[in-house]
Each structure stands twice: as C-alpha cells, then as structure tokens.
Image (cartoon, rainbow, N blue to C red):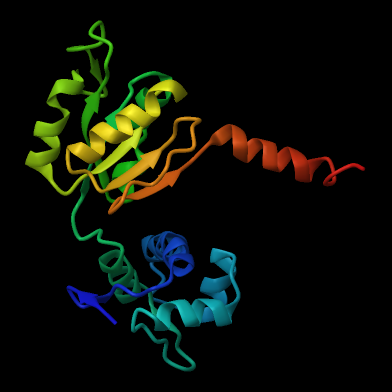
Length: 216
C-alpha cells in the first residue's frame, strides 16, 4: 500500500470513479445545513448500495458511527483531499471552438475545484481574442504555461483529426492528466492518465437502450 499526504494510492479505479458522486452529494447536504448522513441515505443519493458505499469509504479510512452515520463536513473534506482538491486545479483547454468556448464559460468547473488557466488554439485568427475573460493563446505558448503552472490538467476540445497531435503536444509539455472530448479514440501514453468522453458515443448507447436493445 502506498500513501501520499496520508491518502492511499492503491484505491481501485472503480472506487475513484464513484468518489466525485459522494463528494457532490455531501457538498449539497452541507450547503443545506445537514451535519450528518447515514450510509443508506448517502448511498441512495449517489446511486449505489450501502454496502458498496461503506466499502469505498473504508478504503480511504473513513468509517461511520453506528446510529449516527457520517459527519458530512468531515467526510466531504476527506474526499476532497483524496481527490486532490485541496487547491483549485489549473486546466488548459486546447481547441476553442464551440465546445472549448462552452467549457471556458462553464461555472460548474470552478464550483467543483477547477479553474480554466489557459485557452489555446492553432488558428492564428483566434489568437488574442477573449473568451470569459481569458485570452486565446497560440500553441507555441502551451509548453511554457504548462511548466509554469505544473501540475495541470489538459482538455482536448479539437476536431477529430487534430486530437492525436494535440495529445502528443500536451504530453511533451509535461501534462500527465488529459481529458479528451474529441471524437477520436486515443492511445494512452505511458505515464499519462487519459480519459475520453465522446458525447455521440454515449447518445448511441442510450439510443440502443431506448429502442429496447438489439433487434434481431
């Protein structure tokens, strides 16, 4: 078992994926003045079973008190620490088309512990213009800003044909956490955590279920 700042680093990926949901629920509960929550209530709000919730939290060293449950403020702080949200993470967005612009304007990022620190685009016609108070910078400045703000998270919001090249540039700039919104499946570079979100793919999966599954 390895630890960093008191947080275990051998937590299964499936558990890590559920932690933001737990934190989101706890944040809302604390905002409404609720000081404690039972495992059953928290699990139901997060869409998991109480047994799964207790197992996930026990992996982080968090245990409820029988008959009382979990202290919402304390548990929220513990989860935020485990997720590395003790500070606002700088995010660099590459590709300032409609999606990139929407991400730059999205207030939910700052509410969840992230800040758009830089916008980049290969189109020289966009250089110098602003989105949500942020100037759009040329790709030539990517490595410098990534180094100045390291560690950072990179977001790829480019067309499909540019995604692989942009990913390589981010990796070369030392970015080790990348979220890809481009409709392209990218190989995960060594030492880099790459997550891929294809909205069209997700809609196609929903369409499959909406029409009752495969029709033979």
